[in-house]
Length: 301
Length: 225
Image 1: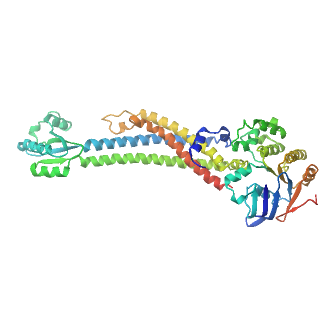
Image 2: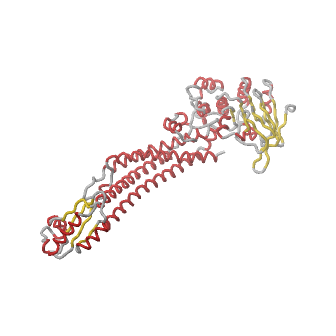
Image 3: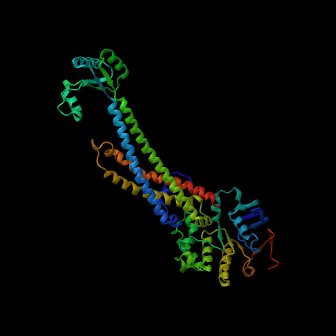
């Protein structure tokens, strides 16, 4: 059986008479439909997980990669001088777009969750923080560290890499797991359809013998089974995808406080991607049934 | 049309047929007789490519069967109508759909064949059984339906393997008349049977050549009939 535009057209157009030569298989047909629907449902969530993890990795990667913090840890009487020295260095550092010291109010707001709103910054050895935003070229963090160490002994540069990288890596792994899950779901659909098609072909050995006796080619016989299983997988997966999408829509909407879990869904054009799942299931079923039919028909004398 | 030249066929270490040479010329009528287990069905299967010879050559419509692919064999079967003693149908299709099956698998629509099908159903006397399912048919009706299915593509050759094995004398005669009619229409007919009375009844109507398989070989058997 050759795969080409002609065979795909014939598959979609169908042949009412040809469809009837293979007897209806009842219960196994319903099982195939159910399994395809269940796999599509899971695939929707795997896709949602993968896309959400991808968004997270991108956001963490891009937002934090462009910022850095310089911490001035110095006695109170030297803090202002060292802060100004550090700012001067930053202003002349290539790759730094802006650098500014956080105001007392901003630092108080940062510490408020732990120390309350009435914290007296002047009375405590709280480091002064300088927010650094890089330009598109990025700065040489190692070089800047050396300059700061030489000229501002109390300055410590934190480019967020220490905690940003594990987070980005975790999100990337999560995205990979999502795609691997989709691949495993597709492989499971292929295995399931192969088993079902082989069982159907074996159960219809007598039918195949009659069809061959009256001049049916292997292509014709295979097509009858391929079309049946492809349409079952396609329709089952379509139903599963719709249910999966409804479930995703019903998830709580994304919020800052909810974090990653409430952002598990689709955004923008990504809502179109789940509609590829039934097509993928149909394609997998087509290939799996075609291979099973060819193998089985070769084995039947 | 169908030629077997020094054909042998072995199965399971034993030789079932040996040095068989046979030519079915267009429009000829042959009987193949011999005791049960002599190899009549095997020979029939060699004649439509269901089996390949272990030695010698089988030529179907001029092509050596060993050089034919699976699709080529399927095309051969559209030119050879086969009727078995234990005829098989698709039990989920009705009689008319079963008879029409060769047209269906060859891509010809049922509508185009509508008149031919009705005529054929009438010819084999099954017009009023068109909507019945195969398990509802009697033995004779099944054989006539099988004959109708075998000839709906207007094949060049009709092979009938013990076509009257499961039916009574009257029905046998009716089926035989249909086969004789086909031969008079120019079809080549080969009937495998061990029913000598059937052969005698036929010889009154048509010039038939009688072949007998004995000791794995084929021989003309006109004299003892």
